[in-house]
Image (cartoon, rainbow, N blue to C red; front, side, top):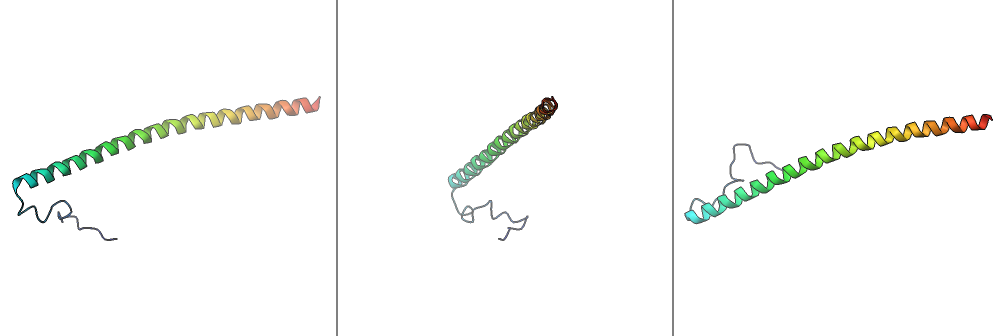
Length: 84
């Protein structure tokens, strides 16, 4: 896999755009703008999902702790009943 050097703008420019008419240049700019908007929207969606994941993980941790407490309580009751 090879990467384009940082200063190289060929990834963002069309080599034929120099000779193209202004309509094509505008159309290409609009396409790029649409792609950038889509990327930003996808990033926002990912941030929302990450936030939800963190919230759910916190709930899972609370439930796990509660389950451990209940299991300890059940074990203690079982031991007390076994002694009788």
